Length: 366
Image 1: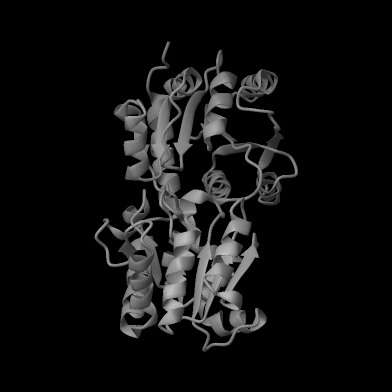
Image 2: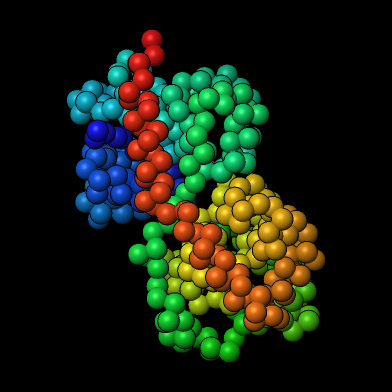
């Protein structure tokens, strides 16, 4: 059974959700399904989809309640006889719910964050309109249930990673040399948007503790966002000086991850954490917080790789366990690779094919 799918993601920029959207559409296309991406023209997702040979429907709504663009989408759904609209962001859900009205297309949504749903009429209406919801972790599933979504509508489908895109771990020294680091530098790497729920402030305080005990040399922070200036000031206040580098948004995040002695995640809220999943799959030792869906990656909140969210001392101890103990670093590396085998793009696509098939084989709701 093949499907004709419109993937709807009109976000600006390039973050984990956009990468997951592209990887899923690309894998489903490889399996013989028709996949079209509705995305903002000239934004990274639209460009990456076109480069991957996927068809792109240009769409730049002013909001999720843009009735004109919803009408354009509705005409397109009918013309292309599409079976499914897959909304990959919260804003896409509203637009998709409007667009598919009066068509035979089913509406699937993926929820990637564990933030509570808004408690207003429009939010309740759009999530009631969804035929099926995929939550990327059990924490996200629980949040949806608390927000009033019927449990029967929710399926947990974790994000997946494409290990074929990773740099060769044997190139670690070369990658360091190209970026001005030596093989002896003890490098801690973090990648994520500089936004409140990623809580890089706790990471900086933890790293200051590591520096005080001589356990690390440099912290490299990849990503950008509204908290950048605040975090730079905090770094200076903590006396970290040149030991912390804020590198901004970069296209070579995987190379920085591959050359790290430790990859760290400090979130207080997190749907799952695909940058962390990349590190696990590459065998880079990790330290993270037991926030949101992160424990799903480790088999539970009691894993030794996890510490309490918002606790700088606990995170520092978690990080030191790797940087001061080569045997623990090796253990976390091996366990990370083992855990990541369950989180592949292929497994994610299998799960979505099952969900799509279940929806399309069921009677169409009135």
